[in-house]
Amino acid sequence: MAASARAPILITGASQGIGLAICQGIISKPEGFHVLMGCRDVDKGKKAMEELKEGPGSAEVIRLDVTNADHIAAVAETIRTRFSGQLSAVVNNAGVGLDLPFQSATPTPETCQTTLAINYHGAVAVTAAMLPFLKAGGRVVNISSGAGAQNMDKTSEARRLELLREDLTEAEVARVARFNVTRRILSDSRVPPCASVADLTEADVAAHVARFEAAYAREVQLDLTEAEVAAHVARFEAAYAREAAAGAPLPALVDGYWLQCVLCGAAAQAYGFSKAAMNAWTRALARRRPDLAVNACSPGFVRTAMTAEYDATVELRTLRSAAAAHRTPEEGADTPVWLACDDLRGATGKFFGNGRAERDWVNY
Picture (cartoon, rainbow, N blue to C red):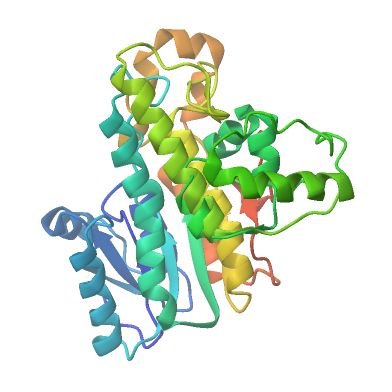
């Protein structure tokens, strides 16, 4: 493939499934984009690259484990030296689903730690390192899931209202690292402004509770910051680890966070929360960097290695049509490719689903 003069697009988790399909979609665009295929296993990535059909664009494999700080730094140095410090877009696709409702594995504290390390913390770390290379109009595309919105829908009312804040910081998202923020304003009929916050008893959130109660009374939508989202992530991880270590089935709600899977949907435990946290962080980052287009999307339920066990789960197939898992990676890649390359007419801080349709952050 011929090299492109355009600033490259970095895609994480690019060696298979939706990530590889996103690579194909981007190099097929007439603009001639150059894709950096971020892969943990370079040899696997090179074999995957051989599967790509020729197009106006080009691709190359670059070593990138999103949980490895040295890898991230090396990618940043490559962009600085080889591409004049220029990057068109970052597509945070790398992800794992270790406690999906159709999987047989028993959740452990490590399940949550690994899931959040890749799905949330990895995306945040990669993006932070790449932000200096994204100029005005650059893109950040976060591959989320409807599970994030479903997870948010199942959290306690107080937690959900807390995450509705429009001033939540990225750091606070990281502390919570398990859920998403919605677009719904406090005056929305579905969100009573006087909802109870009695379950918010931790000393570290006491100050936040007072601010929230005042905001509810005024029916004012505050701004959730990235720092506050990070704080939630940390609390969720602690709750998950505490319950999983006990060896008993995870309860539905702990500390206001939704831990339990839903058999008829993909609102899984750590997975669902990791995507909810990604959504919250997407909104916070979009507010911090209004010069960029920062969006999240759900590719739908796609046939990938992550969903391979789905058809073997008879119980789920009786509750949800098996056809739901019949979307191809190419179909799932359509919206991410659009978000990375096409004219979005100013869209930022949004959540998109199949067919490029904007979706609600809650109850996908």
